[in-house]
Length: 145
Image (cartoon, rainbow, N blue to C red; front, side, top):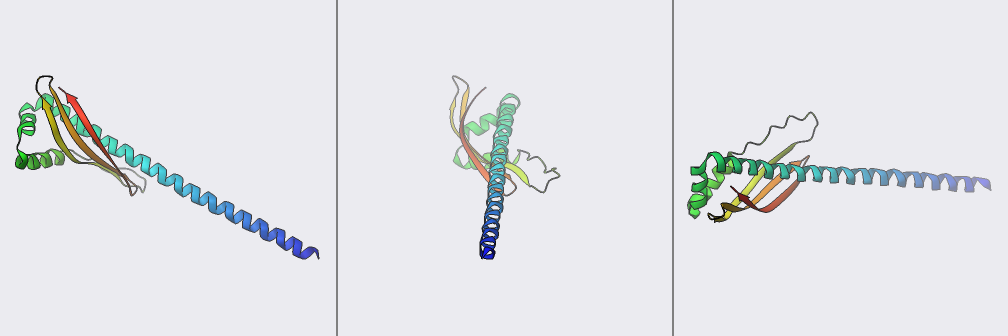
């Protein structure tokens, strides 16, 4: 008579412990995905910051190159933009973890150039990845000289 009650309690405890273990595993994997997505976002932001640094240096040191970018026609823009993007050095993956990370500026476009106030407006898209997760950022950036 007491045996079915004891077996029922043992079965109930086994199911309860199993569901706790499943929910903990599930929440841990969701947390790891969120962390990877945030790291991928910050890698994409690093790509934007690297692009802005290169742009500022080009504005200060390479005025002829910036003028060529600003005044190029549509066919020249494709070539000049791709060369400008290929010149951005992506840092090597020197991490000792198993995660792969990188960033890349995928494209940019000069929207407008204001010579009176010395401003250039650009549409920039950057992509960052970390551990298989990818994140893309698109910004309209106004840079003054």
